[in-house]
Length: 140
Image 1 (cartoon, helix red, strand yellow):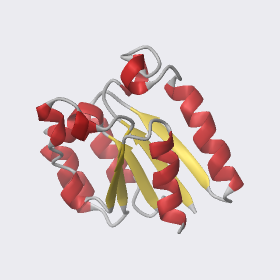
Image 2 (cartoon, rainbow, N blue to C red; image 1 turned 90 degrees about the vertical axis):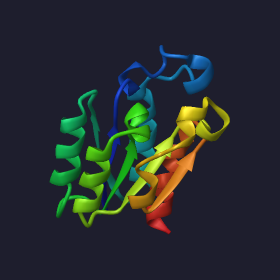
Image 3 (cartoon, helix red, strand yellow; image 1 turned 45 degrees about the vertical axis):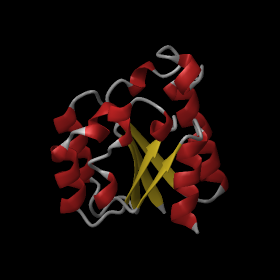
Image 4 (cartoon, rainbow, N blue to C red; image 1 turned 30 degrees about the vertical axis):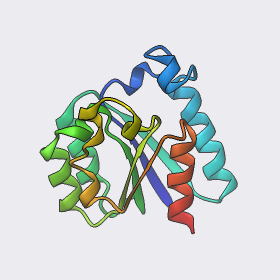
């Protein structure tokens, strides 16, 4: 099986941006851990990060027929991107929404996701392990 790990806006700053919320590990280090876990489970992962909404939509659209699932941390786009929601709805590839922080315990505006309703599920609040749990959910 092959999965796309898709990271959105500002996640390239992971490890530097609000380390008390997102941790001190860089996105590259987290990706290495995810890749090692995937290999141990006999599957492949590809990684993509963009701060540009349209590029994230294009990545979702391009996943059709290539990936068995998408693990998406859309960052702030989670709360208002109808474009990402429509892209998810337009493909048959299942998507699991992830967040490293517990968005339900943060600012009020973070508690609403326009993506959850079109995703297979949502995992939040487990730091870098949110990605591992999402990958594991596809393998069950």
